[in-house]
Amino acid sequence: MLWSEIRKVHPNQWLIIEALEAHTEPGNLRQLDRLAVVERCSDGSMAMQRYRHLHRQYPHREFYFVHTSRAELAIIEQQWLGIRRSNAIMAAR
Image 1: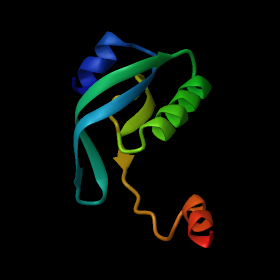
Image 2: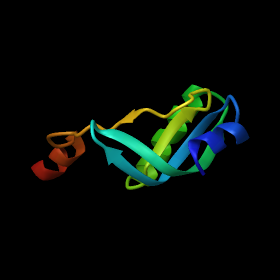
Image 3: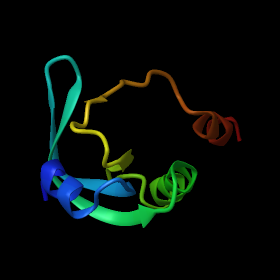
């Protein structure tokens, strides 16, 4: 689905969505071309908790938590440098 279609089907709701197809444009703007609604949430706090759980369970999938009041999704992709703390602990053993 497209974001505009999701907004019509799920007005004024917190959602967990997954990017099934996406690409990055100049300026690190992430364009989500095809989306799937994974879950509806009662509020923003619950959406963030569910997002964290899903991200830990499926780290290679591209999940977002969003509210459908947003007319457009403006997602900036950030590059992370260095190593994560959990990787540093594993390397030290």
